[in-house]
Length: 458
Image (cartoon, rainbow, N blue to C red):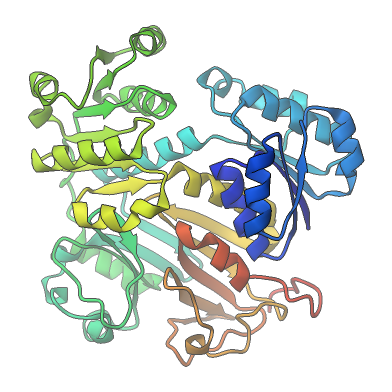
């Protein structure tokens, strides 16, 4: 497919890299010539140094010959206008990034009047994942994702003592015909390998046939365990802090926001109901203690600075707060996060890139897709004879470290794969992947161009 991306910021570059992995033809439009020069030296893309709000630029580009335009500049209004212009000039599908809270209550109107097919909001996306982690856990979501005869179950390893200290090679002796596809450890989701050993504090994601998974669920989930989420402190009153405070407050949770900007505090106080807004510097430990930090059930750091978010999260964890979540955009901090012991670290860039990719791929390629803790994705695809993963034993596929083939639907059968398993045309394949591996995952699913991309399911 031909895809135009307007905006060469972090999100634009992430989406570009992933789409190139899927062998699409990508054009990047940006007004910063220096950024485009760097992009050209690292990726095989066409770049255009121009303002995409000018219709002559879009016409000269031949935007009507493109399959998608994705507008992800830093300016909401520019993204809306560019997407609308592209649609009017004949581009079949357009996607816009829109972040401002003022637009959130009228997204339907914006999409309808401007002809925009999809609107993505990184701050709202990360809010949804934090909310799911905090609230759905406390309201006893059963932690099960099901597709056909296959189910995925999430639970704490300590709930099944016989798992303690055993490796993935030995897991079959405890979880027969099941597979541990991911482990949540110290705030980071990891894909386990043969020598990976289960720790008591690990969160496990186990996949298998629905019936035995449901039986396991009865063993590992205690009713009435999580019922006391009452107080949450949020550091940073930006867009993420705003969305999260509003959502938690509507659920009935007492929320405090600490924000360093006085003008932003005024905005928050006039736009949020039943939320305590505190003007101050959250790095001041005395302030946090005065505001009863130790009594909080959860602590979320959502400032614009990764380093500050991680430092404050570490401090909160050392104060014994049960759930500590940090907003972190830089992939380079991934290994550091694992060693810090915080409960969850989320990247709005990864989450939004995943949302855009799934929209571009459409329902023919990806049947379903669910985010896991905002760091990984479980998806179900239909295997075609043009995919690289067809007719090759899994051990020979050279899968990225962050990708695992979790299960296969073949007719009425469910296959929990081993290294000898081979995927056949028409199989419904469930794949678990870290969001950081999106570009490599797209290469794995790439259309080799041998025949028609997808055939009917068997």
